[in-house]
Image (cartoon, rainbow, N blue to C red):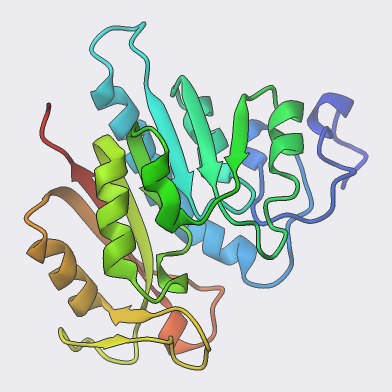
Length: 235
């Protein structure tokens, strides 16, 4: 990391490379090589916009509490971003199977953020208390039962569900679904049309959707990215 940065901006310098860049927090860090930087540039603007919108809509008074959970959180970047943007409590959920959550709590502590890892399978989130905002933005395409996980995510959210899913650009068949994902021994894949149809079939109040390309990925099966912001009825 550049020694030209002031010491206060180099608080993550000694950590190993992680999934995300933390430039949003005004600090430098080493990011994993390859697809990660380009894919973050694709995903971050729309996901952060949805998070900020949901936090604002959850708050009627300045002192209102807003809780947040990031599923498939890896290094917990969006859980930390939610606190940075005004949520009052936040945690990440991940099995940490590949060690990508190893630095989560260390990063959070160094940034002065109270974010912790719930080291469980996302399929077990019904064991946890629901939160105002749930972000399922990092691994729906890694599971073989995405519809079930999507339903659990919706039930875990009291006010808003934010969804991001990798979809295939090889075709746009509205009936397409494949599990395991092409070329993998796990996961699943929709097309843009089939995933958007799945969301529409839920009868949920989807207040915004977006689609873009994950420019860090080289295979057409991994290049599409669908986003949705879902608002739940007030209890």
